Image (cartoon, rainbow, N blue to C red; front, top):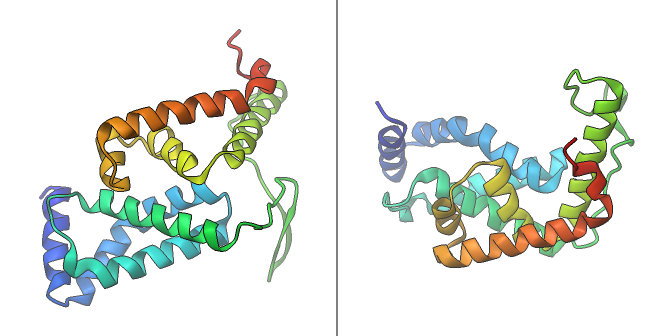
Length: 197
């Protein structure tokens, strides 16, 4: 049974009021939704809030969903809208340093950067590149950041982004190109980090 067929069946059952089918849809997409939200926010709590709000919106709007679009694409649109709405609400949001510690009920923990098993020099360079890209993304308008994450990290095609953002295909291509140029401009002072030896 294909994923599209599974989604179609689950959505049809949801539209008839079957809560179990909705729970299955959430289980199927929650990890992917969280990864996308986290890549946009870089904050686990904010990402979790965005995902929760997105699935609430999905639940409330599932009766209006038409199967000519893929459910995953529709979900990306809702997640992006939740992210943009959250950004509008809280423009003065606190940024957490990568060096900051995390307070939990179990105690205090240092934030960890993913270990790729490179040597110290390679790891330092990789961490510097990641930090430079993240800092550059944070300076960009939210819609440009969302498009770059959708295309380059989530691997969505132009057509999927167009559908998710409800934009013409040509507009997506031109805005994504402008976003890449803007990202390159923000990274200009750190270009030595991206030189291939």
